[in-house]
Image 1 (spheres, rainbow, N blue to C red):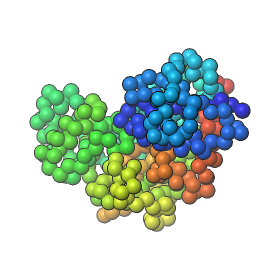
Image 2: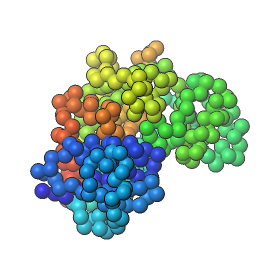
Image 3: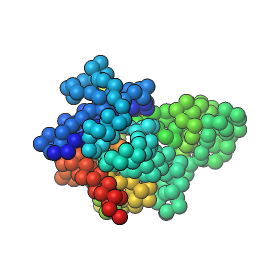
Length: 343
């Protein structure tokens, strides 16, 4: 029986979602195969060891009884790390780099894949260089925006047609995203996004259907079935992802033709490999309603595992139940670690 550490919380704006995801992952793990250790990271970056009920992780009260722990203590306690940390400091290669330094096997993508997938601009640049279809975009930095807000707004206004989507390049769960229809909205959206990241991506708006698939594996990854998000809101925002009353419909499988479905799954695997992803990820797509063209939107290397989350639903529909999915992800982490250390 190995000693498996679950890491949750973190310093990002997705802290609460991480708690819900971690609780779901913990509840699915086979205790006859793994001895579990829980490590929470507070919003201020303090590492804590928690030993209480899983329900307290989900509702955030775990901090009341958790005790501070050092990285060296963590390393001595576990054999394998499973980060369930969404957003910056968890999904962007930082904690993966720490695990590498500790010589600790872990679930999911490595430093390179995590960092590139997290940065929407860097990911799109690789997609374009490898022939993977993605929509047009522009990059704005917070420094340039602060120095010349009118000029940066004008540059984006000339570069792309309306509507546009403005996003922090390194956030998830639709935090800081705006849909804009004119120059005034564009400027306000750029200023909002700059509060979350120094790199801001401005994307052309496409009249599209939003579909997703899950990918698991290392050198020979495989894609799950395709699901569709039908948001009641103007776009699939934070409330639509995590609220009962948002009116969002999740269709698994998506109501698309076989050719489109296979294109999505095939491109998902290519995109996953292009960014050097490993273990597991969710790949998000847009299907143009007018032309049928398929575009990769982004890759999430630590997708949500909550009851509203698409990733476990897609694999469940594909015949891989939640517990077995988590077990496969752990196996891929060990596989990757052993391959690296036996060259």
